[in-house]
Every structure is written in structure tokens, then in C-alpha cells.
Amino acid sequence: MPFLTKFDVSFSIFFFVRRITTSMDNSEYMRNSDYTPTRLEAQQDAAGVISNSKINSNPENTVGVLSMAGKGVELLVSPTEDSGKILACCGQVRPEGMLNFS
Image (cartoon, rainbow, N blue to C red; front, side, top):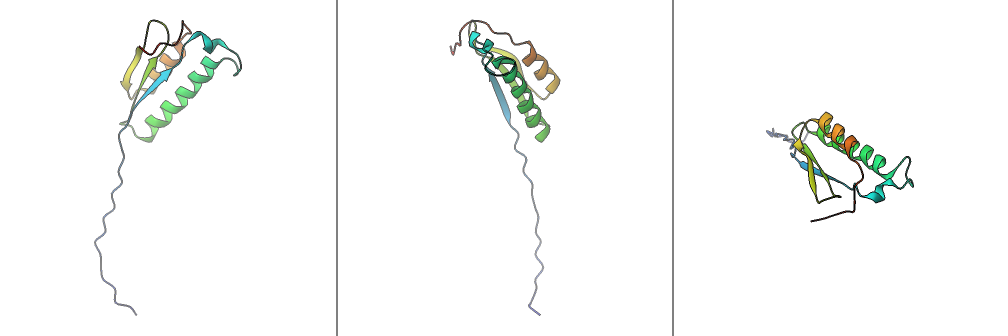
């Protein structure tokens, strides 16, 4: 029988807190219906799924939402853990103007 020694092994699980910002393209091009029903609604659904998965993976994660068209970049929701607030905001985004990065 081999000689066995006792090791004190401690395992640490690291959860990295992340702050995610979702940038939504709400330009007039999002009215195109090459995705069912429109590009904007497909993007809203995807943003909701991503934000929910990030918040559910670690309750300390935060997600914010920006819109990129119209007068300029606009903060719609500051980083928050409230997925209901994020989903409500994503559903209210409407197409307006051209994409603007300034």
C-alpha cells in the first residue's frame, strides 16, 4: 500500500461580477421585416434573453440599455439587477432616425 499523506485542500469558486451594457439599434432600418416580425422586435427579444441569463448567472451582475439612433446615444436604463425594468425598457424602444455614434 502506498504511503498516503493528508492534504488540506480548499476549493474556491470565483463568481465574477459583470456590468453589461446592451446597445440597441433603433434606426429606421430596424423596420425591415427580413426577421419575423421585424428586426427591432427580434433584437428586443434577444436583449431580453441575454440580460436575463446574465442576471440569473450571478445576482450581482448588472445590465444597462442604450439606444443608438435619433439625436444621439441615449441611456435608457442605467445598470441594474432588475430584469423587469430592462424588459419593459426594451419593449418601449421605437425606430427613430439614423444610427448615431456621437
